[in-house]
Image 1 (cartoon, rainbow, N blue to C red):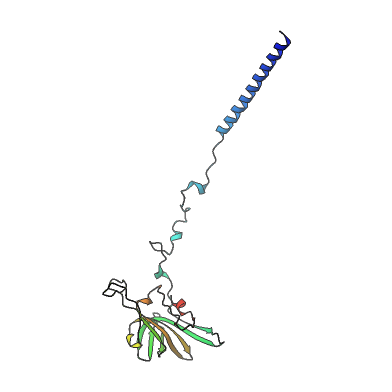
Image 2: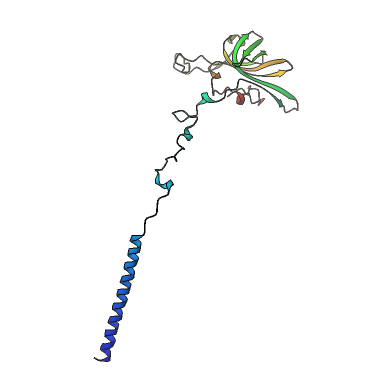
Amino acid sequence: MSVRERLRLRKALLAGVVALTLTGAGTAIAWAATDTPSPTPSPSASGKAGESAPGQAGKADKGRTDQGKADKSQRPQPLHSESVVKKADGTFETQLTQQGTVASVSETSVTVKSEDGFSQSYVVNAETKITKFPAPAADGSPARGDDGKRLRPSEVAIGQIAAGDAVRIAGVKDGDQATAERIVDGSGTGPGKGLGLGLGKGHGKGHGRGLT
């Protein structure tokens, strides 16, 4: 066998060894890849999207109705309050708010009794602003006129207020005398109803916030 033939045979053997080595390594790699166990899913990923964790169901709906809205009837309803504020001119003023039923009324005064038994009499004067809401329909829906349009509250005189009416009042107190600055009568006194008791005089006294 010539030297050239020997070199060819050696190259062929070397190439076969390299091929076998690579094939074995590739097989080992492939086996390792197929034999690796799949990752265990985390608890958070095992449930469906949007599902609550055990024990958490229902917490998001606490205090809400079936329609997903907050149940206003469950809110605490303020009955009466008295607070002292400092006015822009540096003087102090005692402000009153009350929700209740008219116990008695005249051309110059109104007495309101709250559900807890608290009673307060107020002076009514020419500056007292009185708003009356139309009585709701028999089924509790808003009152409507003959044209089908919803009736709106109107400004009235004290003579339109009667004993037994449900009202809210905002006023001021000077010594022992309380004066009504705003009276709201009717369906607007229900839970969650905004009465706008800002007095309409630019005072910014925040009565509406305390009575919503």
